[in-house]
Image 1 (cartoon, rainbow, N blue to C red):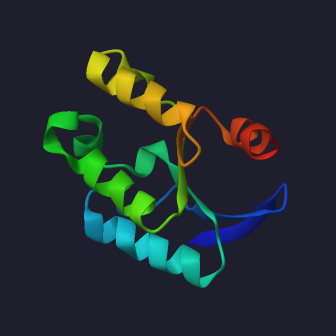
Image 2 (cartoon, rainbow, N blue to C red):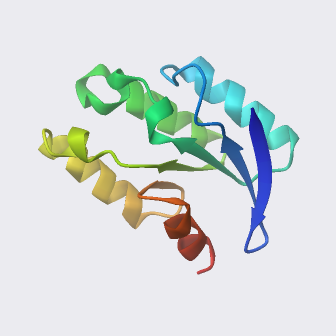
Length: 120
């Protein structure tokens, strides 16, 4: 189940917290297609929906998924606590920090943080 919500005039496609994990380019393309069809500019993926391989950068899963969002000019926010992953990986911490400096990929603690970012 997914929903479309407008936050500060920005259409946001919210992926349900329950469901199959996102773990491949195909998963990214599916959600990008659905979100784009509904007119979304951003996709919110609950951190718990990401496959464990996403958080191990050497697998390249994170890069492949994020690159699809970049290619299709769709913003993506991973929302939820990923501290257990970042505590064990300086490379992942750096990746998250760099993403959060940009305007297209964010790792956020909660929906309130997303509202603040989209509000400018």
